Image 1 (cartoon, rainbow, N blue to C red):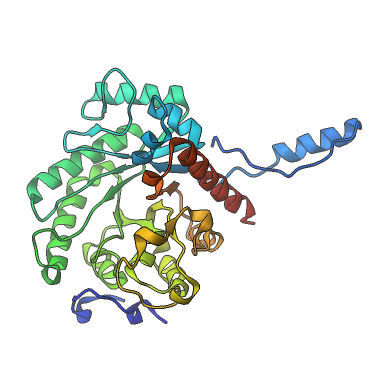
Image 2 (cartoon, rainbow, N blue to C red):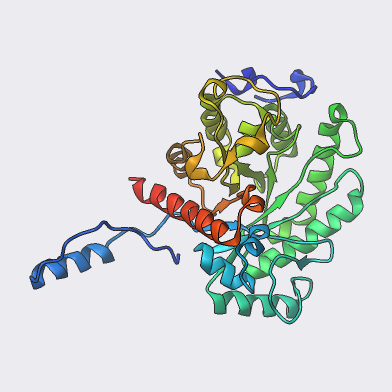
Length: 341
């Protein structure tokens, strides 16, 4: 079934739409007291291919670890870095534990953050903006420009953005979204930074809306933060998810790795949007989504950023449980990478 045949609940007129520090497990072996064998094992370890992508997490998950500072939390989880929330004032509120909040608003602020990242051996793989484009369009263009300049300076490869209707009716939102994002692309052209729309909510989880938006904006710097779980949350049947992932894979600039464990009889249904999510969302290693398939699709499309874990069930876990759960998710993604031939 093609993308245009996917069912959706969004009242958009269809005629408008176009169709690493990573540690790899090399296996458990019994070492005999034979120098040649030990040497061969060492050579094999050196020749292991590096991972394709760093494994990161949303920085909103860090405090749940109970760690005194964000760097310790990243170490406890075992992640290589984070996607970092950024405020209107260019403050990074979830990078905590220093004498003062981290910011990227000035060159001095960015130098301080760069030094902290280098000291910790971590990275920021995306800034996460929480946009309100139709409520304050002029401010949003200016804010996107400031964040893009900071990303360019710091080597952050992508900016996750919200493109959802808040004020404008959904059936009229496409025209507005195309116009405002063209302005953002023009204002940030010199930076070369890529903007990644997250598929979420009742609009950008519709593949046909995304197709129309990306096509009409017409910029190679506009793509997706592919949230693997949100398309499933929206109601798309499990078997159709991989078609959607493959369709958009060339435009994926960032990811949210997330899953749901629905009852077997519900997985291939077109479910109501958000059906029983609070009951069935789960760690990615327990969910229905086959991440071996997901990573193979991304590899084929030459995806080049991170695998960012977004676990929305941590709020009901203790700190110890959160550390264990996220660490297992990290190990799971690294294992899936190692399995890619």
